[in-house]
Length: 361
Image 1 (cartoon, one colour):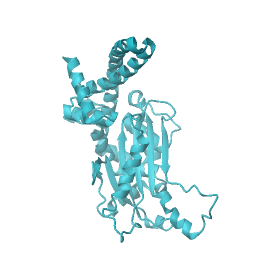
Image 2 (cartoon, one colour):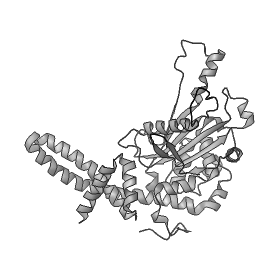
Image 3 (cartoon, helix red, strand yellow):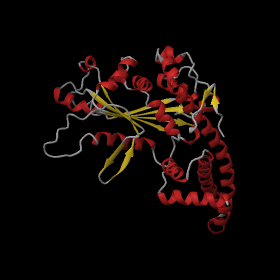
Image 4 (cartoon, one colour):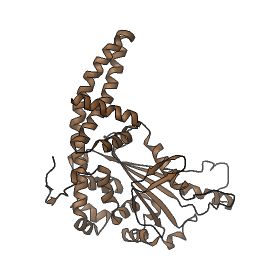
């Protein structure tokens, strides 16, 4: 299914067996690439050099990047972060900040599909909240809360054009009582520390760059950087001119991993588009049949509408399953993927796979 090489770069033997987020984690856990994202996304690091930020990920005790780090909590589901890292704040910058903290905690997530059965921002809220609660394991009358680090949950997601394409959305806690209290007073300043403590950021990349491979001008820096990365345009001069003067050194060292990530995203998008078209056609036919049957009891017009809507949804899901098996995934990984992407229960995911295999004969 895949070529042995792309643009002169030989692909790894297990290239097709890896999931898209596995390719993402291999590339974006590279400290210098992560440092570029931090600089171009988090305001307090915007004046730092990429090299400085890279070093800050070494300066903090136990701050090595954790790929696939888990967050177990009693009575709650475990969270498996894509990339989790603690980063120091430069001493000179600490003196100029209004608030008293010396480290931040960052979670970087890759979400290939923005529109899911749940609201993605609420998932970001949950992940960020767990990063806060994970910092205090036991709560008692003597618990001190001043050591809580600010958290940043950054989500890189692909979107199908529209108003969100190539946009950055930022959410944080805000003091909304500006008109009723004097914010210059010390007690208020102390209370306002939480306004920089909780941050959720969504970077929405137009997925057409996966197939068109063209990254236009006038984009926000972080959007341009990620678009060039996903398009596989690693020789583009903008990398060194705008993002990192030493970017060529990254390419020289990690070209295989970077090329494979971009190639996998492109190939998966192509196959998804083909499977989506096939699944949608089948779904329309099945949905129309179901709609006509229901229409005998509930009205032909209403039945057609419901049948078509259900057919479209199931058709897309079956198309996704077909793509996963086409990429060589096994059944367990396929179930985990559609559960995550479509918000399904174990029972529903298994039912869809049973239905898929029945149709395949």
